[in-house]
Length: 305
View 1 (tube, one colour):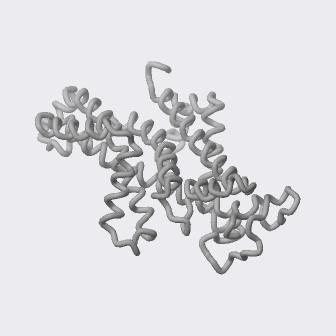
View 2 (cartoon, helix red, strand yellow):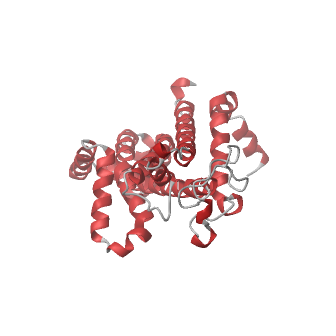
View 3 (cartoon, helix red, strand yellow):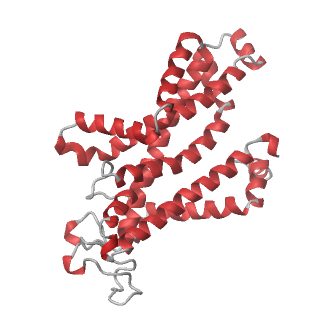
């Protein structure tokens, strides 16, 4: 990128909006720290909570290090299996973010493709896609995710459930959230397909697929970025909900939702730290993503400039 390109990017409306929005800057900083912690989990963690050889049952149910009875080796205490809560949160955050990003990518790819196709072709194709979307919208998203999850688990043999859990979660959440992308892109495509640059491309012999990919798609990506940002928080929250209900990530590979479910079983026995700390991290992550998504929606809206 040249110096002039960097200068234009720095002086753009979105960059100015980011510099003047304290909420966007704080939420971005929080997300960068959380992403870095998840990425560097093997380096930052004091133990691998998935490795049984690193667990010592005599260290189980220890409180945080600053409370009487705590151990300096375990900053946030340990759970009933002697797993370090701090290390479990880092690895669980990594799993939650992997599921969130992958499911958003799947939903965006599917929804954008179907929305472009329906909005550009119209007719029976558009009607069929929108009727399927209407049917999915008539059910709560969590129920659709549970249905997809149940079908996938029924097809796979029981011994493969733990290994395939992350892929099943990505598929279930991705197939739940594509409708928003499809409806948004369809509406924008129906507007764009009648504009002069599309007619000029047709006159020049550009194929329908070429027009959709090279001409219309770049002009409908703005709303898609906003939806994807907000959906990342919803995807992480959906994964946590499914894991909390016991149909998500297994206890041997705990995500934030699994950690909360495990800790909730021991909450009333006084081991509060096992559920409180993962819950706080989940709330902070989803809140930061939603705040950043709200800012991006306003920054990309020309009526608010």
